[in-house]
Length: 211
Image 1 (cartoon, rainbow, N blue to C red):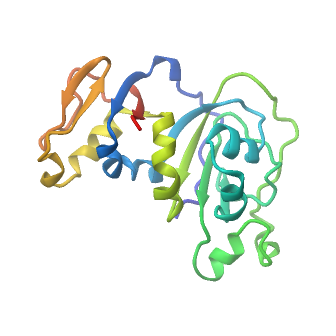
Image 2: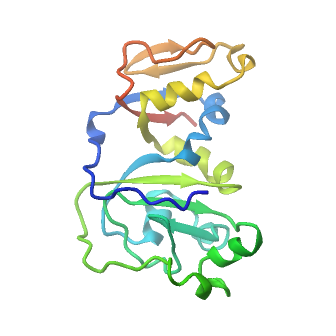
């Protein structure tokens, strides 16, 4: 499902060039699935998986250690929260997955030894510090439980992904005439919207949900 590694040697996008996009909480159910496909966030490379979850994402430590049962780093299941995260990493967080495979993928699970060949291996040579970018993916109950709060902190994605998600929504979503603040101007969202007006589809947005 989400055991998918990305090419971590590719150059990372310049988040400083992102256009601000703000929306109210009414849009959360519409954009929440974007976190399942993955959104970009800034961080300090070389931090641990634990500090990424607790300090960068603001996840309660009890939730991070208990509720989040499965963690993938670049497609490899993580057992040690002390493992370091490199620039360009892909982090996937999930609660317990069903079945035997789910039990095998669980962090520090009794069956974790059965997937030792694909388990994450920590790289002690990762340089700590500077500005980095990682991709975050959320799955099953973790998505609705953590997603809204993470959206209030701001996430990065392309204008094309945002517009494509809007195009998938039912007409009923637009009955109350929802809008966003895009680069300082109000933009009404409509059912026939296939692109954001005046914005290149490849342009990065910093999407923030107002609490």
